[in-house]
Image 1 (spheres, rainbow, N blue to C red):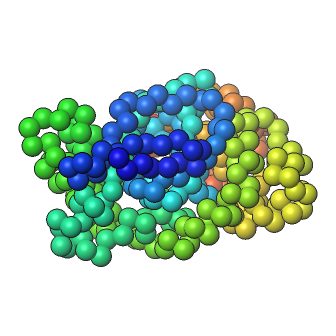
Image 2 (image 1 turned 90 degrees about the horizontal axis):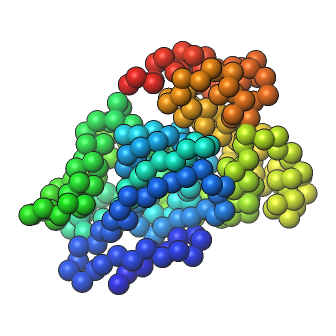
Length: 293
């Protein structure tokens, strides 16, 4: 048995007796419980969201998700996901050793490095409206692994090869293993603050509280956080609130003022201003453009 270690000390067993190095965790129900630990894996993680909305945090990125999206998390990337407050989402997660399972059978992929699809420039949550072929490949992969019909292994290999080719075609790989390790080291120093923001983004959060969780002074904490995330703690908190607001707007018909309140904005004016700065349109315009896609 090979084991995939996560940051929190949980192990995911992967059967390797027949060299079919792919494990299926089945349907995973994700609630809105406070985040108590960040995690990373030493192999590729592929996810499909079946139900619900929420956010994925991968390194210093905060990405909204909804049903139909897929996720691609490279080895070594620190991440967590959380459903909208008061809701749950349902996912399937697969863990794949591409180097052992797929790449030897496809010479054209000899130079493919899944670790390059990480870092700030890679959007780990992939919606079908933007990359339909890639999302379809992941959906088919999940079905084949789940139902295990005749020749499912050949079909799974084909889906994984398609995924690798589409990543290479549609995305620019840029990060190196050294860069991923450096980001992980920076995040480790402020991870308690990230976990607190994930569980309390809808409340008032003081810089002193976050600094105390990381056992440092507010000034030093701000420096460490900015080094890790290339933005201030306040900017990161606002980004988290906006990402969760996007998740709410995709699903709910609630008034924008209520979405703003649920996501930690204490005036509709501040919400509209922050949303437009980041999304380049108002919340109402964004909802109209994205909800029915």
